[in-house]
Picture 1 (cartoon, rainbow, N blue to C red):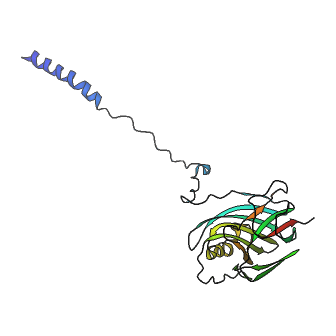
Picture 2: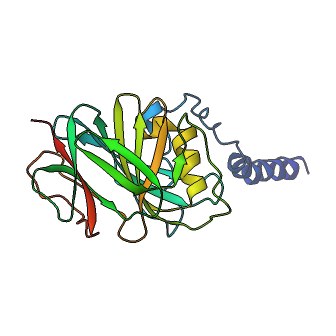
Picture 3: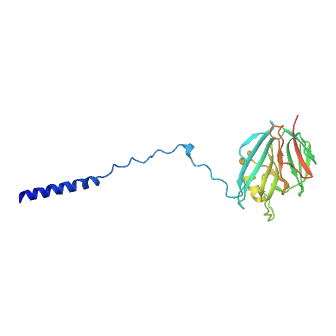
Length: 232
């Protein structure tokens, strides 16, 4: 009887041994990485909303008298995603001429489509029939009388010793005014003192020759155009 009990006990040990081995806890996982990722690993800015235009990037020298800048903004009121090309020029770096055709000596050529009663004097030429103001003299935002139309625009703006010619994709006047008045740094200016629409509609473009040699684009086709020519 005693031998039978011992054998049974031995059998029980042989059966339970492997089972115990199978439930042995696995090693604890290594601690999670807590070091913050380097700044360069931060997520890239989100793309513009689906279907919105994609703007050019950065800036370049403009024939030694200014800068060509590509910027974008979202309208504060109507929410349009707007691309803008900005020719930011030294006030004393150019002379102006009103013409009916482009010229190879122009650093910047801008459409003039009229429609207002504002007169703008520039060195060498006077623009008549411009308007409306989008920033009135003194940096005041005017009333637009309920005008909510979104169109391409060309704007002539004054900012201290700088003159800015700005061409935009479709934008309402109030959104354009808010961007110019409230965010002048976007256009590389400290403050916009006044800004006037000189062209609106599908032909409202500027043509820029950044280095004075390569062909400008796009082409200006309005019957009147403003030519800004590097002072000799």
